[in-house]
Image (tube, rainbow, N blue to C red; front, side, top):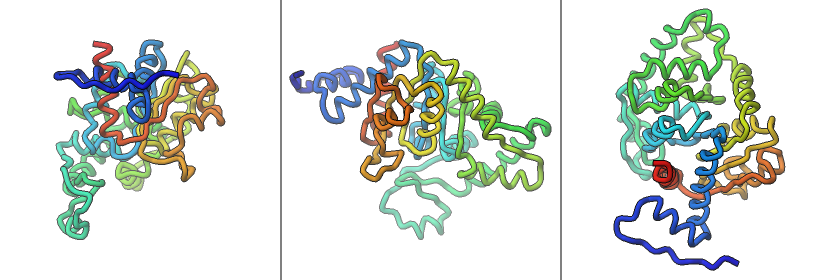
Length: 307
């Protein structure tokens, strides 16, 4: 048995230096985070096709620049996201903002003040009004013929091409040819705007077209890896697509959900082996904790290893 070595902290330690100390301890959450960093490093060294799953309020919670930097650094090849994260990226791209708030806010007062709450993050309704106008303008710019058979990935690529904000992950994905899929896009404010646009214009989103492109990516990959923040539809979309190649070779999930309820978001990645979503010999780890704390540490550790 490996002996637990106690974590030693030193003045001016790097992030990766702390992760290496976690690795020495090797148990509980610290050990799992250190393992996640090692698995991510191996994904990149082995040139695996890396899928990044974005669920929950990843963008409005302050991780937008981290995701964008990952794209620009070549640390991710495919993104699968909730529609909400797309919306909040666009909100900031159109000069809207997110604000620090409180879990214990007076929600009736917030409603009167036209402020929406995401946990302890606030958004102003006036920013959504700007978003709505800009979305309608962008949709009108799409060629009418192309709108008759448009995949979600094509839509988000076009949106990225129209964004000027250098911190936008949609813009970075467009510039670096990283496809962005959002299978649940209609369940968002962007979906509502697509509905309004389609009431007066020809607009057909072909989600099956997305599946064709995604399956081609999976079949062409020699190895695949997944970094999944939260769970939900993005997690299942990534793992479901990898069923076509008998599962992922590498996998990291960070979530606060628990497996006792039987939810997909709380299910450990090991459960995916039973479905063929992860290979029996795959290197996988489930890290239980707050993504806003864990994810930047992992990415910072990786950046130090590849600098």
